[in-house]
Length: 301
Image (cartoon, rainbow, N blue to C red; front, side):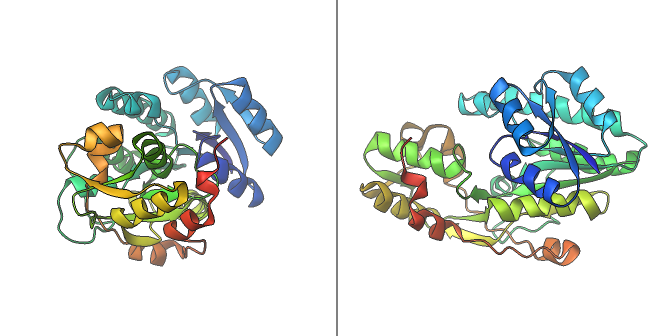
């Protein structure tokens, strides 16, 4: 297939694009800058200049493709605290791509997060069958799933903590940045709340499999480890930069971990049993704590 990808040079895109090219697909990647465009060209992909606000450009690129993978999200706005604005921009982009693909039976793979299930307070391990009626990023997830009724082979990959050498701006680098600033690695409360995780390369393979064969209207979990305690993550970060790990109260979380405060206290183990069975997806790369022990996260550029 000729695949249009948003977020093509970001953390995940840097793995998804090579994964697709290595398996015979061609790629057109959305690029906001000359640097991103040059990277795509170096990889052997075509370049679509623009961003998520360029709805006409998104529509044209989606129509020209055999399938679309949507990885981009306005992280700058999210990290600045404008969660509503970030979600609105993302939903507008998803709607535009959906309109372009309607009635074509082409695949459209969207992106969501397992963290959404944490806010639901399930009190158990979350599965692909768990859904929410609406909310932050949930509206976009539900919209993509509903596109199955409009002649699109739509699916959504829910991401946990995604880790690996390509990760420079995600959840783990964020915690490390705050730990350096604070002089300690923070966790909330007793830190026994759990987050699922996956290596970047395993997640990239799942996106390819979803593009190639996920049934219409499918929610998928890119989960390799069902739950890693945040205290253990903080302790590993502390060892990596030689600072202690320390508990903070929920009320203090925003002071010490900023935009991550809304997520760091969530307890939301999640499974990928159905995803593995449906697409024969088996994670093979190192776990989160193993990656933290390797040390590459702590090399300052």
